[in-house]
Image (cartoon, rainbow, N blue to C red; front, side, top):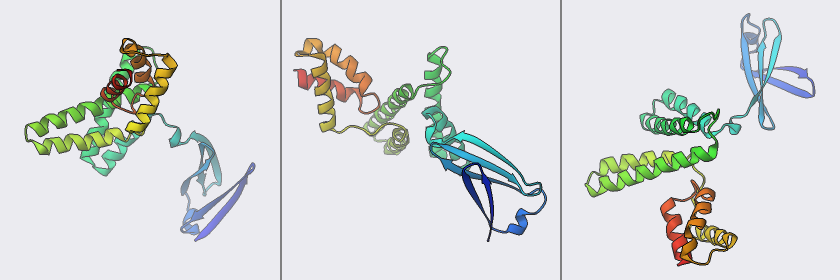
Length: 211
């Protein structure tokens, strides 16, 4: 295995070629990726003419949720993963609906995407519960499998201890002391904890702490 070296500005790039002789073959092109900070330096090299083109692109880690879903749809199609493909297409559908609702918005903010996906996950859980009651475990299992894929796009779900601490902090911030102020607490909690815990659990916790 041969190596080809060249220097560009302050960077040293090394290409490891399986067969250096093939690299010298007319028309052979090489595309290599080098991550620098949060960006990829994409180097395109034509060894026939020794022309090099360097591009700077954002890393995949910088993608928003909407763009990530589009990438995952393509990946699922290539992998012929029907179950995952259906799930990510469902996600894209609700994201498009959320994007359309925000008139004039060029991109869908991740916080809005999280709310839409969390709602989709809740619908899936509710459907699974109904199917279980109807003794259709096959359909319930399918819904829960879809929910698992949805939840991969959501923030880590809060446990009871974390939720209690978060609600207590919000109550203290609001200065709430009774159930009469539940609406005020819920307004902040629903926004701050979106996607991290189901709305029903937030409501129950607020009631228990204010009651």
